[in-house]
Image 1 (cartoon, rainbow, N blue to C red):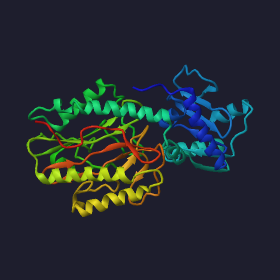
Image 2: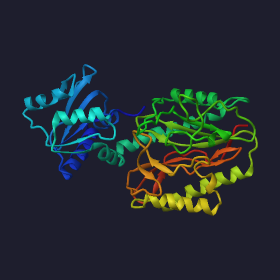
Image 3: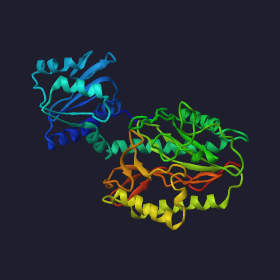
Image 4: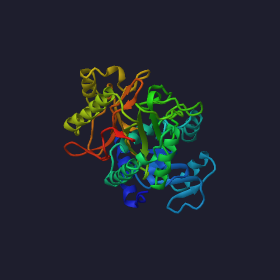
Length: 390
């Protein structure tokens, strides 16, 4: 499941955050979300991580008991924090960042009233930006996930049996993933982004719209309306497997397409266009390249091939073709037509030009790419052509 985050790695991340706090003239940052606490400490606890622009971190912990590190105070409510800081000889911050995009309104108001800062800002945006540029340790963790991700995909063919449903196929895949060390959690940023460990889309179910902001949908069920819905795999349909590679705390993303029996040539042609788009990406993507232009260049090829009606869905079409990955499956940057972001060295992103062909299913691939000094490196190296189950 990857290596434990070292003290030196934590120091690198905290220093990056403190440098940014100093640049924007903020006294401190108060963190309470699991993902950002983990990013900055290498562990998860319930409570608050107090990160001053200079100096040491302070841990205000509700639970669990027994955390062993410096500057730990156990609390039962955030109103205790100001007095604890004063007892340490520290001034209360006049300017404060809170995780505005992740706190519920009542918690945000409560924390604001605890500190009464003269100026506040959004810690969520700042930290997501910092997390989008990976350290060497994080890159190695992503490579660990990618390697095991590919190993699992190499075993998917043996999960198939005649008459199996998409749900049963997904269960078989999830079992192998867990055997291979998958953590089993699908971390996604944003509200209402529930999901399993990924999706399996068979046949026409790939066209079903879902309420979640993922590339493709699937009907799912009433309690989880996305992905597999019990479709029986039959001759002539495709099966897109899009399972998360969470074999370390860092998640890789990869989609591959399998076929049942012989499928129509138009699906094969569309799949080949996806491969063509990936090859074009490898030719143009590099540090400094606009994420909006990556989308626009992709769409030019889609239009040229007369595949616009099928691109990223049919009934509902996603308006992006890629996204950053890391501790969450949807970190910056976003590859969309209105994105203001540019590629930077050590970003890692998933690229997923996909098509849904009526009466057949989804085609196209998704790979995870690392931005290098002069281009991009594919981390998810695995068969890219449509893979027959039979």
